[in-house]
Length: 447
Ligand SMILES: Cc1cc2nc3c(=O)[nH]c(=O)nc-3n(C[C@H](O)[C@H](O)[C@H](O)COP(=O)(O)OP(=O)(O)OC[C@H]3O[C@@H](n4cnc5c(N)ncnc54)[C@H](O)[C@@H]3O)c2cc1C
Ligand SMILES: NC(=O)c1ccc[n+]([C@@H]2O[C@H](COP(=O)([O-])OP(=O)(O)OC[C@H]3O[C@@H](n4cnc5c(N)ncnc54)[C@H](O)[C@@H]3O)[C@@H](O)[C@H]2O)c1
Image (cartoon, rainbow, N blue to C red):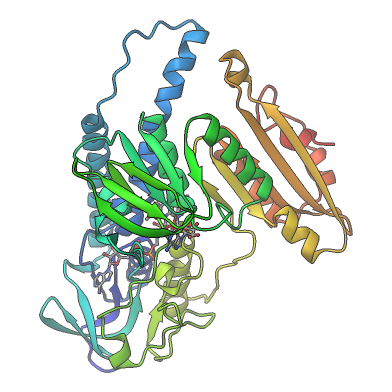
C-alpha cells in the first residue's frame, strides 16, 4: 500500500459517515473524517432528533386538554417556544458532543472543514492536502428549493429549528414526511397551518387508507390542505410575511413559508466530476451493491446515493462498508421490509407492501383491518380513530405488509416489522396471546 496519510477518509460526519469511520477505526484502520458543519449530520443536528423532540413537545397541547377528563386540574396553559427551542438545541449539542467523543475515543481524526477531491487519493480539507487509500462520500442531502419566483423567501427544515418566535400562521410546501410532520407540530402549537401539495396525493408510498385517515384527522384538527396547487409566485407582504399564488388560483398569506419538497444529494463542488465519480440524472452518486462508485477506491453511502433517505439505512450501509473493507467478514444490508414512520399527529408507521402494491404484485391477497378508538381517546372524548391493516399473501398465508396510524404506531411497528421481515404467517401472529389492554393487541386479534 502506498504511503497515504489515512487508510480511510470519510467526507461527511452524519449518520452514515460517523458509523463507518468508527467501525473502520475499530478494525484498526487509520481514519480521518471531514465535517463542514457539525458532527452528527442532518439527523442529529437538524433532522430526526430535534424534529422528534418538537413532536413530543407539541403533543402536550392535546395531553394537557385530555388530562382534565382524567381528573387533573391543569390551570392556565402557556406555551413558550423559546424554552422548548433552547432545551431541544441543548440536547442536540449534548448528542453532538457524544458523537465527537465516540470518534475521538476510536482515534478517528476529525477535521472541521469542507473536503474537496483533487484526485482519487488526494483531498483538499479546509486548505490542507490530505491523502487516503480509500475514500467514503457520505455527504448526505440538502433541502430542495422551488423553481418559482420568490423562492428565496421560503425557509427550509435547516432554519425551522432556529425561528426567533413561533409563527401565528405557516404555509408548508410539500406533501411528504417533513411537510406532514411540521404541519402537525405547528398546528398543535397553535399556528394556522396550510399544507400545499402540487399533486393530488400526500405521502406517496404509504398505504392509501392510512394517508386518508391522517388527512381526515389533520383536517378536523384545523390543518388546511390544498391539492393540485403548484407554486407560481411568492411575494413578501407589508407585514413581513409571505403571500403565495398557486396554480389552482388560490392565494394564501402567512407569517412563514416552509419548503419541504424533497432533498437532493450533496454532490456539487466537491471535485467528483474531476475525479470521475459518476452521478445519475438526479445528481446522486452511482454505486454498486458494495457501495463502490465508478472510481475503484471511492465509495458512497446514505442520502448522497438517493436510495432510501433514512438514518438507519445510512448507518447500516456505513457499517457494512467498514466491516467489508477493514473487518473479517464482508456483508450487505438487506433492503427488503424497511420499516418507516411519519411522526405526524397521530403518527403513521409501515412495513412491507401496501394493499395496492400487494394487489398489483401478488396472485391473491387477504386484507385484515382494525378500526378502533384508543382507550385514552375514548375517555378523553377525543374522536380520533386508529387504523391498523395487515396484508397477507393468500398463496402461503405470509404477512407481507403492516400499516398503522394511531398513538405510538412507530413504537409498535418496530416489533411487528420483525414478523414481516422474518416471513411469519398470519396464523403464527394469531397464535400469539394478546397483552390486554393495549392498542397493539389488535394486531393479534384481527380475524
Ligand atoms: C427535518 C428532517 C427530519 C428527518 N427525520 C428523520 C426521521 O425521523 N427518521 C429517519 O430515519 N430519518 C429522518 N430524516 C432523514 C435523515 O436525517 C437522513 O436520512 C440521514 O441523516 C442521512 O445520513 P447521511 O449520513 O447520509 O447524511 P447526513 O446526516 O446529511 O450527513 C452528511 C454530512 O456531510 C456534511 N458534508 C456535506 N458535504 C461535505 C463536504 N464536502 N465536506 C465535509 N462535510 C460535508 C454535511 O454537513 C452533513 O453533516 C430526516 C431528515 C430531515 C431533514
Ligand atoms: N420520519 C422520517 O423517517 C423522515 C422525516 C423527515 C424526512 N425524512 C427523509 O427525508 C426525505 C426528505 O423529506 P421531504 O419531506 O423533503 O421529502 P419527501 O420526498 O417525503 O416529500 C417531498 C414532497 O414535496 C413535493 N414536491 C416536490 N417538488 C415540489 C415542488 N416543486 N413544489 C411543491 N411540492 C413539491 C412532492 O410531491 C412530495 O410530496 C424523505 O424522503 C425521507 O426519506 C424521513
